[in-house]
Image 1 (cartoon, rainbow, N blue to C red):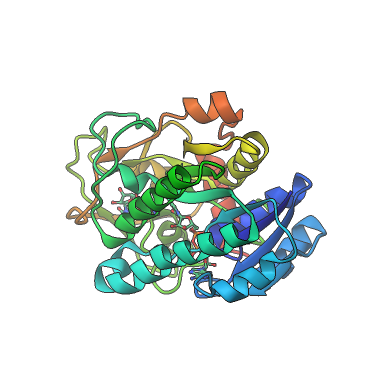
Image 2 (cartoon, rainbow, N blue to C red):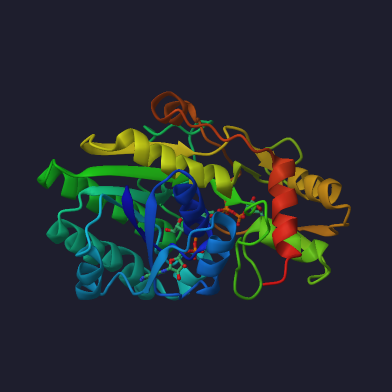
Length: 332
Ligand code: NAD
Ligand code: WQD
């Protein structure tokens, strides 16, 4: 299928482009490069032997999108969004404009161009504080701890309303848990600007000696060792989940919701230990107070994706750490 990939130069988008090419699809990237480099396109070509078409474009530019879409597409995967939780509390309007208005603009352009198959990057953040674990797709959404999370809840609602109004739409809401790691070649990965706010990129910089130690946010949660539990999932597994959704859901109208995780949780200290063991590098840490807005534990029930998409994450925590480290130590 010919697939428009918004945000395709970013972390999850670029890995998905690699998987799509490997599965015989034809991805076309649009990205405004607000959080990515154009050199990623060359890296994708190095990995796959195919240089995907790339357009530097903002998804809020409906006219520009329509021109790209004129060439004819079968589907769209919508990754483009701002994703920093902290920044979203400081600049909520920028987040609502980029993420929510950007999505509305994209949907208008897709509808005009006759593309009604969309795979959307949603997040476990839409579940808020889970009432039961593991988290299933039918758990209520509705309350987020920050504007970023609210943009995801709102965009899911926009997509549901659109599909109700025009049942010919086919929408997959993929709720990622904690994507980490990198392509095993070390050629593409996550490239946060400044000091990372997410756990694994932070650990990678401590292991590399670029940051002195990790601050572990909270040591008194009701978890096996008192630190937060998350469902870390390899970014290539997430990428393959997108290909499975595209291949399985084609032609099936409706709104389809899937968790993309491994189905198991790890504490912060387990991740630290795994990183040290995999890389042979020390990761000094200090336990500090809880981070506001954090939940104690969250991991996914992944049965629905396994049954309906025939997809299951296959890479373990050691592979996530090894590939993160290879990316950390590869020249950018
Ligand atoms: P990323 O920042 O690496 O990728 C997003 C890409 O979108 C970037 O390349 C950026 O330049 C581009 N972009 C942003 N706004 C744009 C706009 N208006 N027009 C065109 N391009 C634009 O982030 P990521 O981690 O790859 O996340 C991809 C998607 O997955 C996002 O929607 C994010 O909210 C969602 N998500 C990410 C995580 C995670 O932990 N990384 C978890 C759950 C959901
Ligand atoms: C993981 C664990 C922290 C950093 C965030 C967003 C979520 C989603 C994924 C997009 C927690 C602990 C972290 C550090 C630490 N993004 N930690 N020291 O918070 O689960 O999810 O990214 O949708 O919306 O909220 O991920 O990697 O920030 O934290 O102790 O320096 O590591 O407290 O327990 P989180 P994270």
